[in-house]
Image (cartoon, rainbow, N blue to C red; front, side):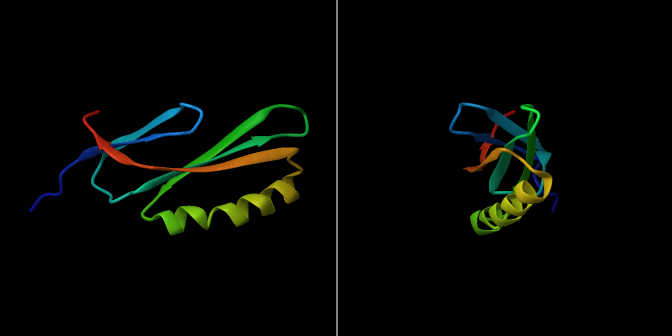
Length: 86
């Protein structure tokens, strides 16, 4: 049986909407790091995971990256992915 292709959408607390797909993967959560660099610019890193626990485990490496790369600050957020039409 063929897996159904679907679109998955996450809405972040600031209203940013990220849609992933079409995919057959069983992703459940989207994570995002917004890093403020020393020069005042912003970089965004993101990904998706198959569980909330897996997404939360990205927080500690983000803190390590902030120290190693000299970020002024960073925000780490996780949002649930929900199936959407497109």
